Image (tube, rainbow, N blue to C red; front, side, top):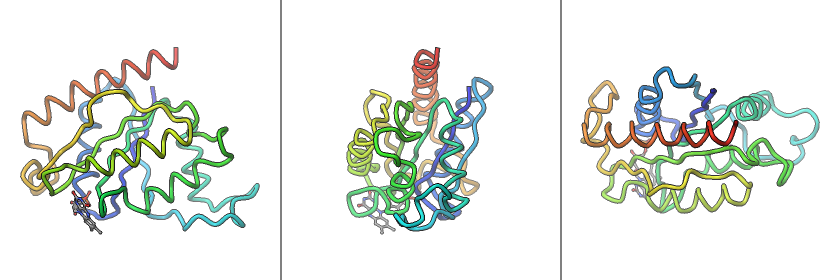
Length: 182
Ligand SMILES: Cc1cc2nc3c(=O)[nH]c(=O)nc-3n(C[C@H](O)[C@H](O)[C@H](O)COP(=O)(O)O)c2cc1C
Protein backbone atom coordinates (compact mmCIF):
# COMPACT_ATOMS: atom_id res chain seq x y z
CA UNK A 1 0.00 0.00 0.00
CA UNK A 2 1.08 3.53 -0.76
CA UNK A 3 0.22 6.41 1.53
CA UNK A 4 0.82 10.07 0.72
CA UNK A 5 1.31 12.67 3.45
CA UNK A 6 0.52 16.36 2.98
CA UNK A 7 1.25 19.05 5.56
CA UNK A 8 -0.77 22.25 5.49
CA UNK A 9 2.16 24.19 6.92
CA UNK A 10 5.17 25.35 4.92
CA UNK A 11 7.46 26.24 7.78
CA UNK A 12 10.46 24.05 8.47
CA UNK A 13 9.75 23.55 12.18
CA UNK A 14 6.04 22.91 11.61
CA UNK A 15 4.34 20.78 14.25
CA UNK A 16 2.03 19.44 11.56
CA UNK A 17 4.95 18.34 9.41
CA UNK A 18 6.43 16.75 12.54
CA UNK A 19 3.07 15.04 13.12
CA UNK A 20 3.24 13.60 9.59
CA UNK A 21 6.66 12.20 10.44
CA UNK A 22 5.17 10.62 13.57
CA UNK A 23 2.45 9.13 11.35
CA UNK A 24 5.18 7.75 9.09
CA UNK A 25 6.72 6.03 12.11
CA UNK A 26 3.35 4.68 13.20
CA UNK A 27 2.78 3.27 9.70
CA UNK A 28 6.19 1.59 9.80
CA UNK A 29 6.46 -1.19 7.27
CA UNK A 30 2.68 -1.58 6.87
CA UNK A 31 2.77 0.74 3.83
CA UNK A 32 5.14 3.00 1.93
CA UNK A 33 4.86 6.62 2.97
CA UNK A 34 5.90 9.60 0.87
CA UNK A 35 5.21 13.28 1.47
CA UNK A 36 4.31 16.05 -0.94
CA UNK A 37 5.46 19.61 -0.22
CA UNK A 38 2.71 22.01 -1.32
CA UNK A 39 5.08 25.00 -1.03
CA UNK A 40 5.76 25.02 -4.77
CA UNK A 41 2.12 24.98 -5.89
CA UNK A 42 1.12 28.26 -7.59
CA UNK A 43 -2.14 30.08 -6.89
CA UNK A 44 -5.04 28.37 -8.58
CA UNK A 45 -5.43 29.90 -12.02
CA UNK A 46 -8.13 28.59 -14.30
CA UNK A 47 -6.19 29.63 -17.42
CA UNK A 48 -3.33 27.32 -16.38
CA UNK A 49 -5.65 24.44 -15.57
CA UNK A 50 -5.80 23.05 -19.09
CA UNK A 51 -4.35 19.95 -20.68
CA UNK A 52 -0.89 21.10 -19.60
CA UNK A 53 -0.61 22.15 -15.95
CA UNK A 54 2.18 23.69 -13.87
CA UNK A 55 4.65 20.81 -13.21
CA UNK A 56 4.19 20.95 -9.41
CA UNK A 57 0.42 20.66 -9.84
CA UNK A 58 0.76 17.72 -12.22
CA UNK A 59 3.08 16.02 -9.71
CA UNK A 60 0.57 16.61 -6.89
CA UNK A 61 -2.21 15.08 -8.96
CA UNK A 62 -0.04 12.12 -10.01
CA UNK A 63 1.07 11.47 -6.43
CA UNK A 64 -2.51 11.53 -5.15
CA UNK A 65 -3.67 9.31 -8.02
CA UNK A 66 -1.05 6.67 -7.31
CA UNK A 67 -1.58 6.65 -3.53
CA UNK A 68 -4.04 4.29 -1.86
CA UNK A 69 -4.71 6.88 0.83
CA UNK A 70 -3.77 10.40 1.90
CA UNK A 71 -2.87 11.71 5.36
CA UNK A 72 -3.39 15.45 5.76
CA UNK A 73 -1.96 17.22 8.81
CA UNK A 74 -3.20 20.77 9.00
CA UNK A 75 -2.69 23.79 11.21
CA UNK A 76 -5.59 26.08 12.02
CA UNK A 77 -5.28 29.63 10.72
CA UNK A 78 -7.93 32.05 11.89
CA UNK A 79 -10.46 29.33 12.65
CA UNK A 80 -9.96 27.56 9.31
CA UNK A 81 -7.36 25.68 7.27
CA UNK A 82 -4.41 27.56 5.72
CA UNK A 83 -5.03 29.07 2.30
CA UNK A 84 -2.08 27.15 0.82
CA UNK A 85 -3.75 23.85 1.68
CA UNK A 86 -7.12 24.93 0.29
CA UNK A 87 -5.34 26.12 -2.85
CA UNK A 88 -3.61 22.74 -3.34
CA UNK A 89 -6.95 20.96 -2.87
CA UNK A 90 -8.56 23.30 -5.40
CA UNK A 91 -5.98 22.32 -8.03
CA UNK A 92 -6.32 18.62 -7.20
CA UNK A 93 -10.12 18.80 -7.25
CA UNK A 94 -10.52 19.31 -10.99
CA UNK A 95 -12.26 18.04 -13.07
CA UNK A 96 -15.12 18.42 -10.63
CA UNK A 97 -16.47 15.17 -9.15
CA UNK A 98 -14.05 13.12 -11.31
CA UNK A 99 -10.75 14.25 -9.84
CA UNK A 100 -7.93 12.23 -8.28
CA UNK A 101 -9.49 13.02 -4.90
CA UNK A 102 -12.77 11.28 -5.69
CA UNK A 103 -13.09 8.14 -3.52
CA UNK A 104 -9.57 8.65 -2.12
CA UNK A 105 -9.54 7.57 1.55
CA UNK A 106 -8.25 10.47 3.63
CA UNK A 107 -7.37 10.88 7.27
CA UNK A 108 -7.16 14.33 8.80
CA UNK A 109 -4.83 15.20 11.68
CA UNK A 110 -4.06 18.57 13.21
CA UNK A 111 -1.58 20.11 15.62
CA UNK A 112 -1.86 23.55 17.11
CA UNK A 113 -0.20 25.59 19.81
CA UNK A 114 -3.65 26.38 21.17
CA UNK A 115 -5.83 24.32 23.48
CA UNK A 116 -8.33 23.60 20.70
CA UNK A 117 -5.80 21.64 18.62
CA UNK A 118 -7.01 22.73 15.19
CA UNK A 119 -10.58 21.43 15.63
CA UNK A 120 -12.12 24.26 13.64
CA UNK A 121 -9.71 23.74 10.74
CA UNK A 122 -10.73 20.08 10.68
CA UNK A 123 -14.43 20.94 10.45
CA UNK A 124 -13.76 23.14 7.41
CA UNK A 125 -11.41 20.63 5.82
CA UNK A 126 -13.90 17.77 6.21
CA UNK A 127 -16.54 19.91 4.53
CA UNK A 128 -14.22 20.72 1.62
CA UNK A 129 -13.31 17.05 1.21
CA UNK A 130 -17.01 16.16 1.12
CA UNK A 131 -17.30 18.63 -1.76
CA UNK A 132 -14.65 16.76 -3.75
CA UNK A 133 -16.21 13.35 -2.94
CA UNK A 134 -13.23 12.20 -0.86
CA UNK A 135 -14.21 9.95 2.05
CA UNK A 136 -12.65 10.98 5.37
CA UNK A 137 -11.87 8.30 7.96
CA UNK A 138 -14.77 8.35 10.38
CA UNK A 139 -13.32 8.76 13.86
CA UNK A 140 -13.24 11.48 16.49
CA UNK A 141 -10.98 14.37 15.43
CA UNK A 142 -7.29 13.57 15.93
CA UNK A 143 -6.06 16.75 17.60
CA UNK A 144 -2.70 17.65 19.09
CA UNK A 145 -3.34 20.71 21.27
CA UNK A 146 -0.46 22.63 22.90
CA UNK A 147 1.81 21.01 20.35
CA UNK A 148 4.80 22.99 21.63
CA UNK A 149 4.78 20.66 24.67
CA UNK A 150 4.47 17.41 22.72
CA UNK A 151 7.46 17.46 20.37
CA UNK A 152 11.14 17.82 21.22
CA UNK A 153 13.53 20.31 19.62
CA UNK A 154 14.28 17.84 16.83
CA UNK A 155 10.59 17.59 15.97
CA UNK A 156 10.07 14.13 17.44
CA UNK A 157 6.70 13.41 19.02
CA UNK A 158 7.62 12.68 22.64
CA UNK A 159 4.20 12.70 24.31
CA UNK A 160 3.43 9.04 25.02
CA UNK A 161 -0.41 9.27 25.16
CA UNK A 162 -0.40 11.09 21.80
CA UNK A 163 2.01 8.52 20.32
CA UNK A 164 -0.19 5.65 21.47
CA UNK A 165 -3.33 7.31 20.17
CA UNK A 166 -1.65 7.99 16.83
CA UNK A 167 -0.49 4.38 16.54
CA UNK A 168 -4.03 3.09 17.12
CA UNK A 169 -5.51 5.64 14.74
CA UNK A 170 -3.07 4.89 11.92
CA UNK A 171 -3.54 1.14 12.38
CA UNK A 172 -7.30 1.45 12.01
CA UNK A 173 -6.97 3.93 9.16
CA UNK A 174 -4.74 1.51 7.22
CA UNK A 175 -7.19 -1.30 7.86
CA UNK A 176 -9.95 0.87 6.37
CA UNK A 177 -7.83 1.79 3.33
CA UNK A 178 -6.98 -1.88 2.82
CA UNK A 179 -10.65 -2.81 2.96
CA UNK A 180 -11.58 -0.10 0.45
CA UNK A 181 -8.83 -1.01 -2.00
CA UNK A 182 -9.51 -4.78 -1.98
C1 LIG B 1 -2.04 33.33 10.48
C2 LIG B 1 -2.17 32.44 11.68
C3 LIG B 1 -3.41 32.23 12.25
C4 LIG B 1 -3.56 31.36 13.33
N1 LIG B 1 -4.81 31.12 13.81
C5 LIG B 1 -4.98 30.10 14.69
C6 LIG B 1 -6.29 29.68 15.04
O1 LIG B 1 -7.29 30.19 14.59
N2 LIG B 1 -6.40 28.64 15.91
C7 LIG B 1 -5.30 28.00 16.44
O2 LIG B 1 -5.46 27.04 17.19
N3 LIG B 1 -4.06 28.42 16.14
C8 LIG B 1 -3.87 29.45 15.28
N4 LIG B 1 -2.60 29.84 14.92
C9 LIG B 1 -1.45 29.25 15.64
C10 LIG B 1 -1.04 27.93 15.03
O3 LIG B 1 -1.79 26.90 15.59
C11 LIG B 1 0.42 27.66 15.32
O4 LIG B 1 1.19 28.70 14.78
C12 LIG B 1 0.85 26.32 14.79
O5 LIG B 1 2.11 26.02 15.31
C13 LIG B 1 0.89 26.34 13.27
O6 LIG B 1 1.12 25.06 12.77
P1 LIG B 1 2.58 24.58 12.30
O7 LIG B 1 3.41 24.45 13.57
O8 LIG B 1 2.34 23.26 11.66
O9 LIG B 1 3.17 25.60 11.38
C14 LIG B 1 -2.43 30.73 13.88
C15 LIG B 1 -1.16 30.96 13.30
C16 LIG B 1 -1.04 31.78 12.22
C17 LIG B 1 0.33 31.97 11.60
